[in-house]
Image (cartoon, rainbow, N blue to C red; front, side):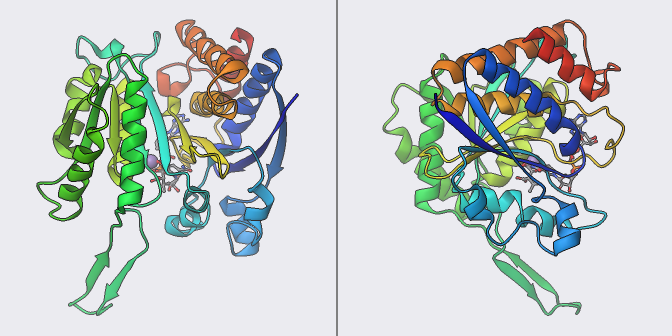
Length: 358
Ligand code: NAD
Ligand code: IPM
Ligand code: MN
């Protein structure tokens, strides 16, 4: 039997609280479907490690986790002690780049039992996927501050859009749409205001679309696209976006369905040359850390995506994924709800209920 090696990096804040719930559900699902998992726990990648070592990860981090089959990640960031741009660039953003996890797949859907934040009649039928570019775009450290400290200060922050990087995420999005019933793709853009990158991005979408005549697709400016997430979320199927636009859409989407505490993400290197990383969409939530009220579903659902991806989205891993999602559905329908969902369940109560329903 294949044993999958999984690096477990808990990180900061509620990452420490939701990870145990994720691990117990993932382990149980793996056992149920005959998958063998070997978890390797690491205490780095978060701000506690930084305070002791003045870096987020050991120098040889790549050797340590490079041969793992996947990384299961909690959350990183503790802005009271370490500035966010240091902790994030030293941890999660480094994983995404160095392991070429160029797809960030973030499914968004409603669940029975979860009060949708929207009052539109079709609010209960939301089911779409945000495919976010994950290694370039607006996230860059290229630029600088000129005339610093003077009243002539000028700040430049470069975006980077390569043809290689853009075409591959667009292709992945079209392929994702091909596997779905609606075969519909929305391309987020802002080619009216960003005069260089986004008209070019649109032209790459047009070029890639030539290979997918079966897909109905539109480009939509990010401002109205965000508005439509709120007004008509049920009309979306697959949405592809640059790094920053995808980041914003993947908080907005789950917020519309009720809470970001549910939202999972898969940072994928689809070629499997490097480990892929699975983590909730949310961060370390300092405002609720220590209260034992964090919703563990984003963490658990991300674990389900990990099992599915490990086994190439087929066989035991796909069954384990489906079983976890069904257990989440049952639990929410049965009204075990954490405070972000309007209930009183603790993080562990929610994890235990999902485990029991598995
Ligand atoms: P956040 O996602 O941590 O929290 C935003 C809000 O959502 C908070 O009110 C929080 O209580 C709530 N929330 C988040 N997850 C929840 C859950 N599971 N259950 C219930 N409520 C939940 O975003 P933030 O406050 O902007 O960021 C806090 C820190 O996390 C920062 O350092 C930020 O940079 C970092 N961050 C990290 C990641 C990551 O590791 N991938 C993602 C987002 C933010
Ligand atoms: C996310 C987070 C990160 C991002 C931050 C913490 C750098 O918001 O995973 O969505 O913007 O990618
Ligand atoms: Mn985000």
